[in-house]
Each structure stands twice: as C-alpha cells, then as structure tokens.
Length: 353
Ligand code: MN
Image 1 (cartoon, protein in one colour):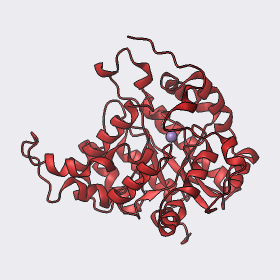
Image 2: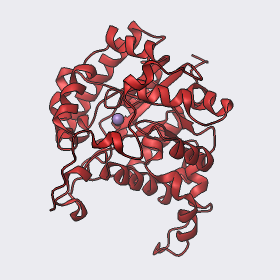
Image 3: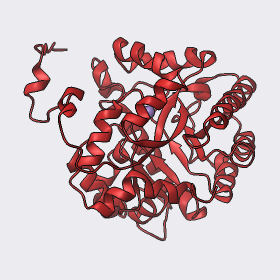
C-alpha cells in the first residue's frame, strides 16, 4: 500500500472546505430556526466495552473526545443544543451495543436495562429529549415485545438497529414478526451503520475505508436494499425505515435501481412496484454527518421534501457545523422548515403527545 502523507493544513486548501467553528463566530445566521435531531448518541458505562468495537473504524482522537460527550446527559449537552437552536434531541445508544453480543439472554437483558436508563433521562427533560430503543435482534419476537414496551410504556419515538446481528440482516424471514409489530406500532426503525461479520477484500490494506469514509455507507445502503427487494415494504406498507448520512448514497441512484432491477439476476423475485416507489414511500433520510448543499438538493429532489430530516450525529459530528449548514443551506424556506423540524414532528407524531 502506498503511503500518502497529508501536510498539516492540507484540508484548508481543499476545494470542499471543511468550515471551522471559528468561521461562524462572526457570520450572520441567515435563517435561525428551531431544529429536531434524531441521530444523537449517548453512552452508559456498562456499554463502553461494545463501543470499543467501533474504535477499529475511527481515530483514537475522535474516540476519546466522543466518549466524554456521550456519557453526559446534562448541562453540557443541553448547552450545545441551546447554542445551536436544537429544541429536541431524539437520543440513541452509540453502537454497536448488543448487536455484537453473542449470548442472546445477555443481549436481551442489557438492551432492556439501557432502555430503562434512557427513559429516566427522558423523564428528567421531557421537552428536550426523546429516545430510540436499543433492541436485541437475536430474538425477533422478544425484540418486537421490547419495542412495544418502549413505545407504549416508555414513550420512545422508534428504535435504532446497528446493522446486522450475527450475520443476519433485517430482511430475514424470522424478522417478519418484528416488522409486523413495528408497522402496527407506527415505530420508525433507524438502521445505523455497523460492520459486517466478514472483512471484504476490497477494504484490505485500506483501514481508512473501513468505517465512515466508505464501508459503512455501502453496508447500510445494501441492508436497506435487501429490505426493498425482499418485499418487506410490500408486505408491511406502514413500516418506516430511517437512514442517516443523507441516505447512505441511495438518493443518488434511484433511477438506476429502477432501470437495472428488471434485467438483474433476480430469479423468481417480483415486486409490483419499482424499487424507487418503496424507497420514497417507506424510507426517510437524515442529514447526519453530511453538510453539503449538493447532497441535500439531491436528497430532497430524489426522496421528496417530506422525507429528509435534520440530524447532527452528535458527538461524532460538530453540532455548530450541522446547525450552520441547516440555517444557511440553499433551499426554499418551506423545505428548510420541513427538514429542520416539520418532517420529524410528522414522522414521530411529536405534537400529539
Ligand atoms: Mn451515528
């Protein structure tokens, strides 16, 4: 592998400039607007051992900075939300959590315990924090029961699942019981990136591709497409899936999915509608970790203006960068209102509760 050394400051000269927080200090917020974030993470000490699995994907510097912020449910998190006009954060455990737990009974017990911890934090600040359930997908029926408990008793907004569980993806037949319940409960399911059980050869010798730069997006996009082509959304039209990172590349490719699906090697697999129909009807995407006007325009045009929702991906992304992007993005004010909070209020029925 050829080594590439980037000179200090190389990024500041790049064509796609990474804005620094200092840049914003003197700039006028052109569209200050209240926001709802829904990929906002936390951690509890009991789950740090699972979080350590993610250290293969991110730099030690980010891991260290992230942990301190993740463990805080209090004043610091609220202060950052206030500074950036984030009214409501829907919190989720930073992965992979029990997705990688080998003992199903342990996974189930620990998932329940972290949901109880989150519920207590939500009760302390009901106007600021919501929650996505952490589920042990090792047992689909128990996962459905826990989702129901979290939605009905703990007043959560949905669930987050960190990719595959023991090599099984959510289109597996055994998960029908789960999708049926999620659809009945009107509980959106956020598929957050995680690592597959194997390490594909294309990433060999390139650890920088293993994680947020590349592999997570393709792994998660493929996971979502498995659900589309397996007919999960045909069988459960009310099921709702959330994808982060501006849709993990899906919005860019809708035309190609529709064009190439009929000539793919699909054997007896059929769908009454083209793939893009299900993607636009059953999937919404968040802006987490993608602060680009080009990507946002593509997502809005491809998915529809009701299907794009603001998020930060706190604390792995900078809240001020995401907020500044949202408030200055080159979109219409109606689109901004929807992305910033309106679409989240509709998806999660936030004004009804
Ligand atoms: Mn995240």
